[in-house]
Amino acid sequence: MTSPSSSSATSHTLAVTLGDPCGLGPELAVRALADAPQRYEQRGEQLLLIGPLAPLVRALEGRPRFFEVLDANAGMAEQLAQRGPGAYFVEPKGLAGLDYPPGEAAVSGGLAAGRSLELAVRLAKVGVIQGLVTCPLNKACLQEAGFAFPGHTEFLAEGLGVGAKNVTMHLCGPMPLPPKPGEKPLPTLGMVLRVSLVTTHPPLADVPRLVTREAILRALKHTADFAARLGLSGPIGVCGLNPHAGESGRIGREDVEVVGPAVAEAKAAGLNVEGPIPADTLFHFAARGRYAAVVAMYHDQGLAPLKLLHFGEAVNVTLGLPIIRTSPDHGTGYDLVGTGKAKLTSFVAALDLARRLVG
Image 1 (cartoon, one colour):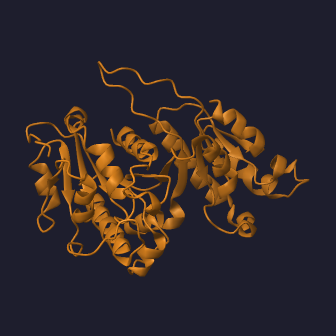
Image 2 (spheres, one colour):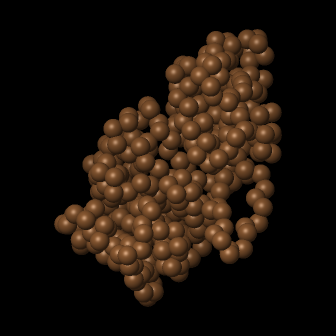
Image 3 (cartoon, helix red, strand yellow):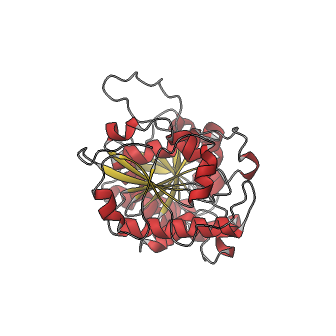
């Protein structure tokens, strides 16, 4: 367990929800975080793990605990204020003593995921945490446990008072933290894509009516803000909805009547944007650094090229929330639990990005 000093300065508090504890969440947290406790003090970071204790202890597999257990019945802000940088853990009420079968879908896993998110939302609302990394959950189990949300994004958007229609789904390739003084520089990254979606998971037939001027402008503003926080200065490239961006209205009218006017309005508001651009051209140049990010009109338009480059290492970011929220871009991985074969790449990338954005 870490031995944090209350005299050390804390610059931020980052929470990690374990998601469905029957899945990979506890294992990813242990493997990524257990071996480097000194780094919390270097970063001035408090990291708060949220979820049931038993699956986390099981994932330790005999390793010493790297976290201090806090009291869920006492004030979290007060407990953290009395402590310095380090790793901490809290178990939401009602989760102790339940069965969490490793590698199996269970209602208890959905209940744990939902209760953990509820606590994270409460802590975010009162400013205790500034960022949140969410481990994967099972949406069916979440709903079966009584939480009427399709997933993390809608849960957090409603809980934090934003509304699911006012956030933007963004995925990006890994962006490791810059080295600290004295650390060895990281290898130069190759091609990196950053993609925001105007629509997320509707049937393809519904996409044209959902691609509205308001939806495009919201995605553009969120994406421009995100790029600025990362220190990226290039333009935001906007995909056309239709092949060849509609060829001036000869292949559908949406790019002339909706996408183009939205881009013009964004430019008038001072955003550095270009488009509509044919998607098959835009992604070639975006991957090579011409654009800070891409705004795509629908799921497969944006995420097929992103996952071609970044499958297994991408990060999901919810833009438009009052706190930073990142997540690994994979599922619960029930079949990999306990095998040691699950890759840490996406989880570590999600942690790195959250740390970069709250730092």
